[in-house]
Image (cartoon, rainbow, N blue to C red; front, top):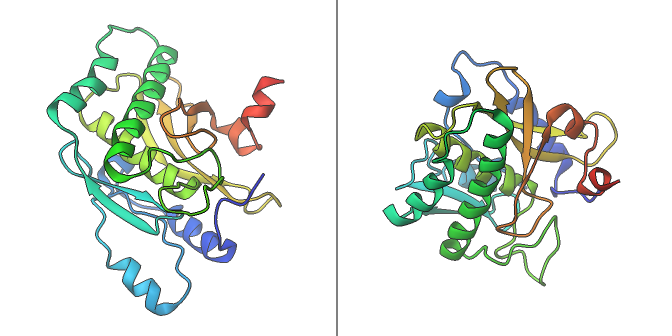
Length: 224
């Protein structure tokens, strides 16, 4: 797998910070980008960059241009949010169906937001069209997907899941580092990766058991 970040050392430090214990549940903690700074001056600049930690459809932030090098504040119109919310209108009675609805919602949100912030042509993984502008790596994808999931949760659209914190794999087992957003099934406590990095903008993200994802899951392995 390709590296989806440019600085392994900084990534490890931030990953440890993400996993630090906290008394607040994840739903009450602000979403923060993963900053991969190169020097002290850049660290100060990035730490003072505004990011809406408690997103709502009328005001939220997204990362882009690889590893949250750019942050854009945006919003959805009532019509756009209605498009998203109607995906959850069915009276479903199982978590599997809701995970499929979550896939559709994240893909739709990516499409809508992409047209607003210039990421409509984001390619799968770390492919580039000659410039990082408008491209998303796994840090961007994990952050933005967490923003979308948090909005779904806060608008009471999720009945069978809650949103979990971002997590990573590969750092301590010799594999390339990789990040993902997560959800937790309420009835079982099973945790799932919600990984949009493997796909072009607006395509359905993968939702797979986190244990399998941690062991190196990739779309190619799922097809075998």
